[in-house]
Length: 281
Image (cartoon, rainbow, N blue to C red; front, side, top):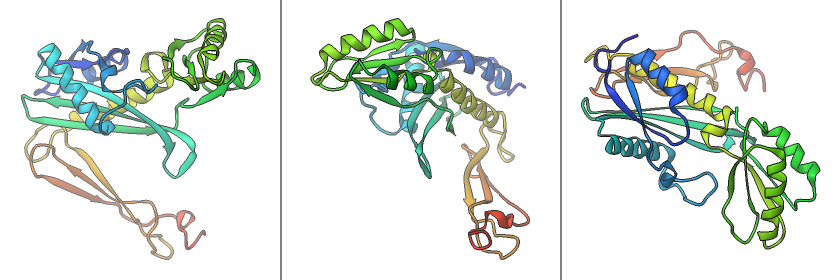
């Protein structure tokens, strides 16, 4: 697919961690964009291991990151991604990864951000004294080691994390070294959430990138500008048995990012009574 306003346009991609591998072919195929890596210090926007706290929300950060890549490369079009990890909404015992991918085009005056929420993540950690290999090995199995790397740092008393550990012998020696530096002898071993050493996260980035590429490939029916897409979903589809509102989508709102055109799609029919709190409490 080719989008005339974007075809063969050079665009920067701000990344130090290999995000060009899933995103470059996506945006070339869907839009005809030519992505160039802007190898800026993306860690300056925040690190998962806490040495650099993120300033602002993930959505704000991903736009700043895209603009930093544009400034470094001289491109007037830029992309970036940013991840955020925490409990899954409504299911706090389940970890979640939210990946944002931003597109900024100063030629057309466009800023479009799409995101994907996924439970496909190994986000988590274990605290060990270095002698309890049982709990450490159980955590390694859960987080997909060694295809997914881990980080190691003293649990107390400071000390910089060692990142990208993906060999068992290296891990055990690193844990012992960190235990000697820890004020209480304990060590925190965490999933390394950087994209290039975390295949699970890379898949979610690819899904968010595809969602953004599909949206940019959709022209506005009114002004033909790229980026027409969903901005809101309204819940409350009535139950087809009792007509009480449910938690199912009733309306999808799509907007243009350039002009005021808005389209609302109302879902016809009703929700299955099996999802109704009154009919199936």
